[in-house]
Image (tube, rainbow, N blue to C red; front, side, top):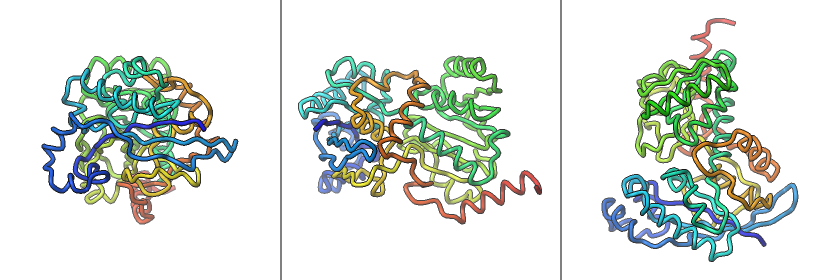
Length: 362
C-alpha cells in the first residue's frame, strides 16, 4: 500500500502541545515552549488509516508528522535553521516509506514555498496551496451568493496578496469579479501583481499597503502569515463576506462578537471521504481536514508522486486540476464554519437583510 506523510507544527503553543504532551503543556510557560521547540526532534504523531477512494477503490495510508517549531520560531529564526528542521522531518517521512510529503501551515510559507525542501529530499513534495486556493475562493463566492452578493457587481479584496495563496487567489478571483483590491506590505511586489492581473484579465485593480482599504469590499479573502489578527470590526463594510484562510487567524474574534451584519467563514477546510481516521486531534471537527492535507492525500490516491505545488508562483492550471482530482476521490468543500463552528442561519439572515437594505427593493 502506498504511503503519504504530512507535516504540521504548533500554531497555538499551549493548545497544540497539549494535544500530544498534556503534562508539558500544563507546566511549561509559552516562552519555554517557543524555546524548546527549536531543539525538540521531529516525531510521528499518528498513522492515518481508512483512506479509500470512492471512485477507484484505491487505498493509501499515511502519517502525521510534527515539525516541532512553533509559528513564532518559524518566522523569527534564520531561514536556513527552519529549512534544516523541516528537512529533518522530511527525512523521517522517507524512512517511513512515504511516496509524497505535504507541507502544512508555515512549513510551506517560510522561504521559497517548498522549493529548497523539495530539492533536499528524495520524496516528492507539495505545499497543498493549489487546493487551498480552489477551496477558499469557491467558499468565498458561495458564501457571497448565500447572502445576496451579486458577483457581477461585487468588489473583492485579497489581504496578503503577494503571498503564494494570496496572489493565486487574487488571480483566480479576478476572473470572477469586475473590481479587485489588493493589500500587502511589499509595495513593489504588490504593484507588479496588480499590473499582472490587470493585463491578464482587464479588471480594475487597486493596490494598497493599508488594510483599511478593504472597507470598500463586498468579498474579502485574507491569507497572511502575520501570526496575529489584523482585521478588526472597523475594517469591514456592512454586509461584507470574509473568508479567513490564515492560521493563526487574520480576523479578530471581535468581528464575530461585534459585527452581526458581517459573514465570516473559515477558509481552506474540506470534508474527507467517509472512513478516514487521522488518529490525532489536530483541532478540527470530525470528518474535516485542511485543503493542503487533502491535496497531499488526493495526489497519493491518484498515484501522482511528483513535486506538485512548490514555489510561490502557483499555476492556475494546477489549481483547476487539483480541484478535479480531489473531487474525484471524495473530498468536498466544508459547510460554512467560523472558528470551526457552523455558521448559524440567524447570521446568514442578518447579512442578507443588510445587503437587501443596501441594494434597495427589488
